[in-house]
Image 1 (cartoon, rainbow, N blue to C red):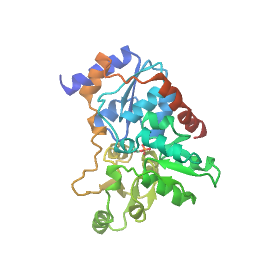
Image 2 (cartoon, rainbow, N blue to C red):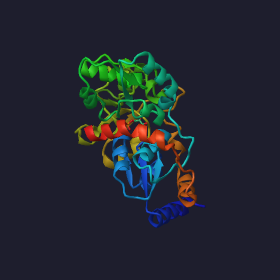
Image 3 (spheres, protein in one colour):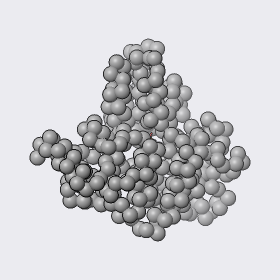
Image 4 (cartoon, rainbow, N blue to C red):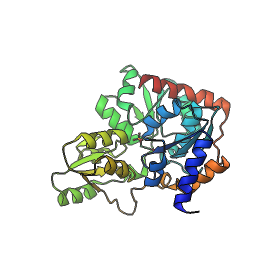
Length: 306
Ligand code: 13P
């Protein structure tokens, strides 16, 4: 089938089956273009919480589809490629977190949404990069908190809020690999250009940027800025929305050695897989109802607080 046939087929099946297509900003441009809603982690969780579609086709990574399913246990959640994972989610195993909690019962667990349902079920509250700074302050200042699984985001929250959360040892391989040296090369080529970055980047890198924010916060910041050129330190998929909203602006991205700034998992979503998923209603994400019942509480709490 051609690309046009896949697009026509997705549109027809979506209407016939009352399906909604949710996509993260890191997915391929053609995936973002056909989606009903494109967002960052927070916006996608919000959208998943209030859709009246019968089927959710989630073009993102596994933990995001899990979140949509947990919020809609009676709906069918389809995933174009079940192997689209996240190294952050992989970094925190539920068994290890359960052991930590047993050994340190005095700690509350604050988890970044980039974690498995089993880890969410062991957490007191979930945050995204878009609401973490605000939601951490719902805990008393002297509360002992473990932040999992992103040590860079946790470190950023600590520095911004004066907290001393204990940090799990996980990181996003895209953001963690940006280096000051690569940034300096770009700054030398484009002097005076504003640098924006995701808080999943390392502390020493963030010390050299002008604006730190979630995917949606970076898009808003750039779109509202009078500046015309930006160095953007995050996953390449964001450029599609940035260029659509800001056709008059120029974006420079970092080349970080042999590790491309593409999230391979996000890029596994494509039109052919989306078409087949809608046609066959497969792969479908199924989850243990007991696990969903446990994991929903800290997610709902986040949505109520944000
Ligand atoms: P946001 O979507 O919250 O910016 O986070 C990026 C990310 O890690 C996606 O997996």
